[in-house]
Amino acid sequence: MKTLLIFLLTLVTAWTMAQPIKPNSQVNRASAGPKPVTTRQQTETITVLGDQAVTLDLDNFDHFRQQMMPLINQMAAKKLVGLGEGTHGTSEFYKIRYWITKILVEEKGFNQVVFENDYADSYRLNQAMPRASASELDALMKQYLLAIWRNQEVKELLSWIQTHNRSAKKPVTFGGMDAMFMSNDARVLQELTRRFQHAETDNLTQLLVKLAVTRDSIWYNANRKDFAIPDSVSNANLVQGYETIKKLEPILARLPLSTQQRDVAMNMAKNIFLQLAGPYTYITKKIGSFDRDSCMAVMATRFLHKPEDKVIIWAHDFHVAHTSIYDGAVGGTGGYIEQMYPGQYFALGTGTATGTFAATDDRFITHASQMKTVSLAIPADSLWEGQLAQASAPAFYMDLAKWPKESTNLTYRAVGYGPKSGKSTHDKSHPVSELFDAYLFIRDTKAAQFIK
Image (cartoon, rainbow, N blue to C red):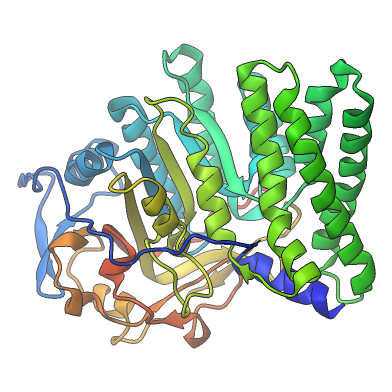
């Protein structure tokens, strides 16, 4: 059970890879694009930490669009944009990212929306969305989205994607970059290859589905206090899964699939491989580092199918960040992306000081986790969020390329999907200006509307 617990705990913060890419916090991210245009009616600047920030109107989309346009123009120059969230359950963070996504899609040519959600589950949701009614969309969200995304605010985004795609020349694809579950990856591979009636392929995919169902059940049952499984059983499942996908990958490459089907098949296989490779190395060789963020970066960049594709990522602040936090324990997907696509990535962090957010008591997040409304701890004045809360405007953004590093070198909090937001969430691994290109702050916020 000891090995299993180590494995599951690291899945929450980082997946294992045998040879992870190292995030580069020293990448030059000088800002581009025009300076904010100020109008008395809609936009004004305020002083925050001794420099200028741009106020935001969160009640009027047109005003918000105009106020955000300097940052939007910077984002538009990139291939990938990370839109972070300071908690996994704040209504306003979903709302403003929906608005930013809408602008980037309608005006700047972005066409891939990628969540911190399982890759194959998101693929299934994307396939079913075009013909889904409002009530059917609720059911699809419950089936394919982690509970952190199962809320009315995300439903508004998905409903907009449905409407947009009915007439768009460049439709939006919804996807995921995470690797929490394996069952749907394995089932999609089985569905894509079954028609060839290739005995070895059929046997391998059938075995992979069986192993994946067991692996997923371990994740789900790990939230039960009475759950226990011997290391030998868990490890045997994982090792057999890794060896199976290694046998299957070269076969998939040879099958007469269409270009689109081949992309799907190889991505499903890659996602399974990334989930199992590190743990396999740890079990068989007692070496390996746990790095979920490098895996997510690989999968996020796979949505750049064509030269004209542009990706919007929705994830926690410290996944979209350019480098990791907690002394390298978690985060930094953005840093890996920056290494793969130098100069082509923009990270927006978001934060709040007071109010409520949606959280779960589950140790490991699943589709079935139940979210509840909890209050944010009031930040001390010395914290990053406490300092920003003293500004005169209730909502604003900061172009961090214009901020002296010393002014952003404050302790901040990293609130996830759990209910804690006090000292245990605090970190000061890097100045905030090294983590993000820009930061959007909303003083008081409320919990997202969970769909039960």
